[in-house]
Length: 114
Length: 114
Image 1 (tube, each protein chain N blue to C red):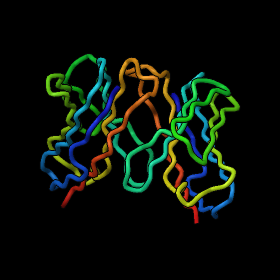
Image 2: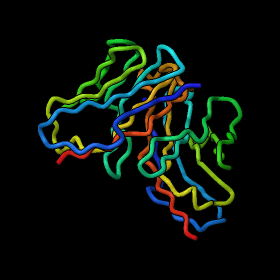
Image 3: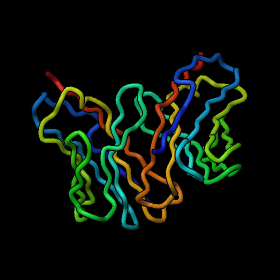
Image 4: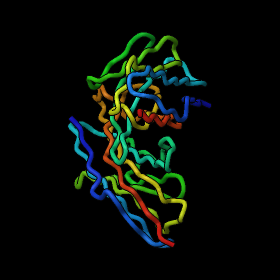
């Protein structure tokens, strides 16, 4: 079994300040983990993914995430928020035995204030 | 490179009318195909997935059906729409069901049932 919990439904930051979007997962097997971003009325775009290589994963648009097995976390960070980062972010887990491809978190809406 | 196309982008349909949403993938063969629904303010719900032509797995009982008449074509249908069918529908594909394989999304279709 696998599950994913995004700890914040909404996060608001000021432009130029750091972003932290939190994600905890559970999985019976070594998971792969993903972060996707969805801008309004658009499909989901892959930001980054972890697949048992380096625990610190760098993605597009300056985002990165760190896989911490001891904490079962995969938090998404960015040093400095930009107005264009305002969107919905989804954390996703996939286990090696998953017949169903992915389990999505409920999403975190990021607001960026000028 | 692979691309995924989904249409129509938006549609407004009366209750009881039929539905057909189409999705095609280019640049790959034998993809795994998926239909997700995203209700307003909620996460993604997997509706159907397919590992090959004519092979459809339904994740939840509902008023919708899916078909895969060709390798890279996936269709979501309904004979009679309900108000509760309103939402944002996303088609997606991946190389396999195994962990670590990224899933790629189309741009989505907004369905409003009135």
